[in-house]
Image 1: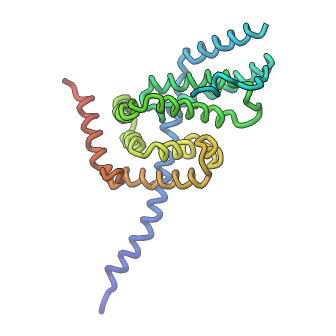
Image 2: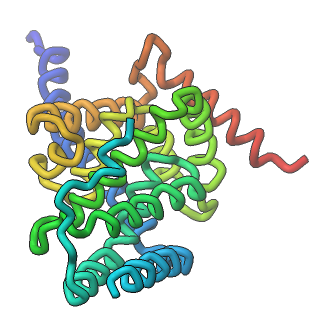
Image 3: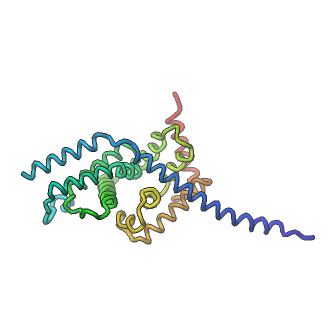
Length: 64
Length: 204
């Protein structure tokens, strides 16, 4: 009796690896968003608002 | 060279109410501008400088912004332009920036964050800039391909192919360092980055 082991294995191996690739892509996506969101959720340094307020004051003053 | 910056033709005057609404929306976008800047500039300090410059530029250009359109995409475009025009001005700094970015991505890492995230940062640092940018805009920034294309001033198809190449490359890097750039294997790049990281973090 001849068993078609090697090709069989390879075939079986090919399919899960496709799913696995998809899963890994999803994991990459999750990590990528996490990285970005980590910075988004940091408190904004006061400097930003100060700069904007100064710019706003200047433009308001320029209007009258 | 920067004639466009100094000669705003037919400048519309904004009302106080418009300014107020604009400012509110702009302030809400600051965290996102900071995050995007961090992915471009690498080290947090110059990233914040970049985000602040972009914020001011957006404020100054508020008359040309149409309320109700996508302000996030608009400000990201300003930030990106700012980044690349600064780079062009000092192209010699580009190399340094890249090295600094790779080092800082490691050096500023929160030691408590999972290793997988560190690998992710290293992997991103190894991507060609245009691929990294496209992947971040679409994969993390939540932009549609069309919006990302507008931000990067390229065709939608270009963004799509950059994103998919970036995904494949990242997966290669994260899997086994098989990704190759300019004939230098990512495995090698990773090893040298890791060596730097160890050198930086080792107690003396």
